[in-house]
Amino acid sequence: VLLGGNFTAWGGTPRNRIARLSTAGLLDATFNPGNGPSNQVRTIRVLGTGKLLVGGDFGNYNGTNRQNIARVNTDGTLDATFDPGTGAYTRVNTVTVQPDGKLVLGGSFPRYNGIGRRNFVRTTADGVLDAGYATNTGANDVVFDCKLQPDGKILIAGEFTLVNGIGRNRIARLNADGSVDPTFAPLSGADAAVYSIALQPDGKILIAGEFTSVNGSARNRVARLNANGSTDATFVPGSGANSEAYNVLLQPDGKVLVGGAFTQFNGVAQGCLVRLNATGTVDNTFATGTGLNAALQDFALQ
Image 1 (cartoon, rainbow, N blue to C red):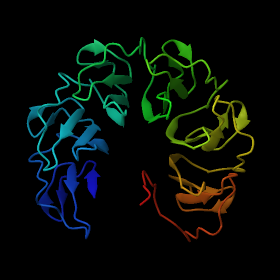
Image 2: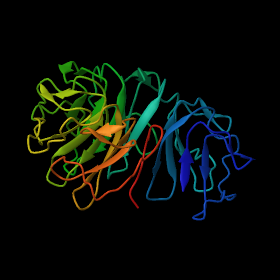
Image 3: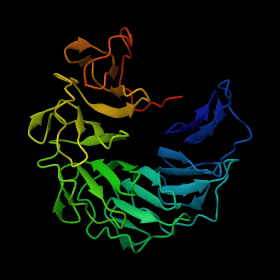
């Protein structure tokens, strides 16, 4: 188990913001990051080689300059062959790895390695800016999540209202070259932040966030879009979540997990975690009881 965050120790042993545990939950001493990242880790991606991509708010990794993005060897040491230069000027929230090894980063940065790239950028596998990726003016506000579609297009979600100068309220789809995909036109989009995206095999898109309306239809914090960005009217979550939803995840059986800061979903008590049927109704066979007593930020399926 890999951990990333803002901690400085595990069980009394120093571990700055990144650590690895054994399957029994014990600290894995063979993974030693030294001083590790100098500030918070917000995302970790495991590569096919076993190495890790780490993004966040840090300025260095174990004393070596790495602005908010780094690659880490399997033993926790910095991989010096991944050199992003001055990197992302500020926070990296999410990293997506393409099949060709290129990386798409999303966050709240105004530039990458000194070149203007607002809030999303693509790099080579070794962290060098991909100048052929047409981000132009980029997103005009933070990007929280990005997901790669099977056709090579990328969905991005966040707080933005413009992408490459084109109106896109909090969710957009990019072509493989970084240009805005005009076939994904979500009308008025979401009226507040979208934090998380999940792709369905049929091309539909699940979103979770802070919004209460999507394309003019009432959708409290959870919604499903058709492949063209329109609201899927067959997914009806009722009154939805009564507070933020931070993450949405599709199960192999088509059911949907939603986590966040909510205490109710469609009027029924749900402590920050709920499972929905494919139609958006609450799955009452998933008995969470009183659930969690504070916000759920992330989860994963085994």
